[in-house]
Length: 334
Image 1 (cartoon, rainbow, N blue to C red):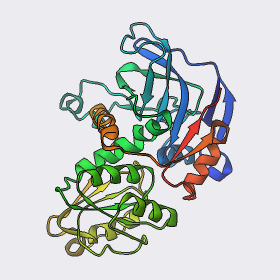
Image 2: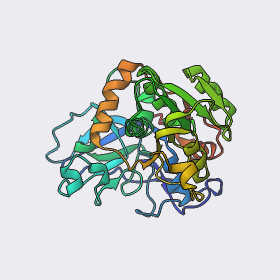
Image 3: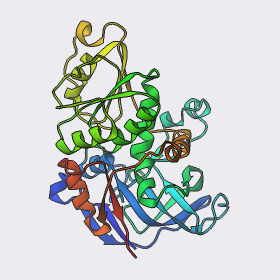
């Protein structure tokens, strides 16, 4: 099978990925093998390729927004049948025994493993997943629409819930890319007002089209104080302005797996009056299942740019240089 591997992490324009021929992976006990049809392109893939995240698996195959059909069952696997359409997301396994797993917080499991970082992912013609961590996909979602939901959607959904946004509240979204444009649709469907400061002209247009009440430049302050904000951009220097935009008691949720250094904060100006800063760490399977139930009902629609499988490196480069509006998706033609 053809697969992209991260051969030597480095700047994406230096070509850290290589297209190789590998033997298709064999599913182990309780696992299934998918024939991959599409794979979403995530900023986390970029962090893996460029070395922002430490190497967990040398020559890993990235990609964790994977959609395909079950082609082979490992011993004991019974949740899916051959031919079923299945999604693979970031969370690949947890221990199931630690105090976090036992309390419904498996995203914090110290022994968790992740697709496209610890285990080979979906930048390949086939991928293997523990069937307990795979998702049955609603018929209402096409492959291209389902893929971005499997990480961008899930993380945005978890981040939105962590804001504890009141009904009709004002929500700021910093970094209006794949996750933000999906979580914005859920927030709007639930009655929120959306405020979007972003440097991308295309992203500003998309935000307006989706119904944002205010759109401005990345360095502009919203005209109203916000009840909550989510920072999707991996840019620590945006934390102080996002905090300043919050009203008393407001919550800032930082949704990225990687963030550049945060500048010093002024307690009185940035944090006082019970402002809160939270981070998002991965997701639980329940987050993904809830989102996949909600998305068709709320008519969440991913704005996508498709790339042929052979152009995976170009897709990551375009993402790095803010040339992707919405979500990028690799399409495997057979």
